Length: 542
Image (cartoon, rainbow, N blue to C red):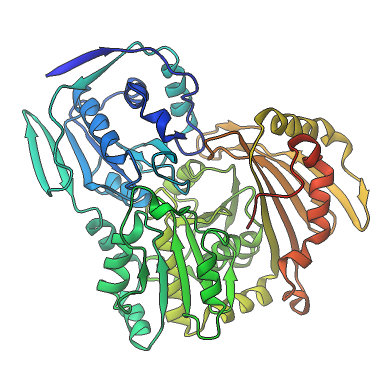
């Protein structure tokens, strides 16, 4: 039986870079999830009898929210809903299921790398038929609908079993609980040389992968240990927990410092790696060598042909604007196009669908390819394993040889988290107002070559995205970028990206802090960060 429930709009249900994210208690309010999900369906057409994919990262409130999502989907006319067992589907696995089964779209319940638990974060994101995040025209329409919604339709029925594999029929409609790992693992086997990687592990190669008590645990255990033969115990924190074990599921050097310490120890594993809450980000550290996400993207692009799924070569490379320009050097070397897009994986979707790009990546630990339409943490780790197995070299050798050939882009991101939003907005506007006069300004040995507010014209659909971040370029090839993030749930996060290019191999072994010291100081002075935010230092440096 379908019930129509009267409701009223909630303030602030505007999707950010990757869906709607708020603190969990906000989503737990009566009607809050229902309002947003109904608003999504109200902005779509042609889904009568179609398939919807639903899954999440297992965080607190995931199972309850899935019940609401599925009942609203069926009440609105979807014919079939595919759900990961236990409500579990990593974000890249969801993208794959949408594509593999020809689904109309999917709902992902996650706040990605943000912490979970009763007082943590939650999120809802809609992905379209190509498996990628909904484009801005859809998310803006959804936001407009949330401001005027007055009722939603929901199936009045008992909660269904999320844990038993199989199909439940409700008249002409079906709910199918599927193995969350099987289809994804099969895809990875097609892309990578599993026999060669298995031989690498058999030779004594040691891996430590931290699933961070998040969604990738079941995937990593099955692929690395069961299918590839990595030593038992290679996967740490493999069981998804609603609060991620009380830890922050962001695979960076702050929240995964234990992996860095392990990799830098005298007898450390050959490769330490991790993924985040929903499985779309990655961390890669070789014995004695941390690989920045920007360098990882460039090295993956330069070596992708070593994996069977990319043996024919790379058609193009795409990176988000704040990501270092290391990938640009690779694109130039191999003679393919380099696309610089705004932050947000949805901007890569058109390039991938059009066959213009094969490898994509963001500095925020996200990399992927045209195999799905999301970034993919396990894919990146498997690509590194394939590269190491094919080249017969360790991570450090691969990285240093890459720098010698292409140059090194020293790079860091300074995050000022949960600053007061009004101050952050004023900082950005003051910078925008100053742009016309910045060219030619000199600060010690640094001279500004140009500055702008990045805007993007999509070469596929012709859409335009303005005010995507302020870029300050220096004559020596350095760069500072300022941007407000759309992935937080409280206040504002100011991200400052600092980069310097070094072509001389003799100067490629400095510490990042040393190489970027003058630019880091200037980044604070130029934007008046302390004045506008009250912060004298970043919350996190990656």
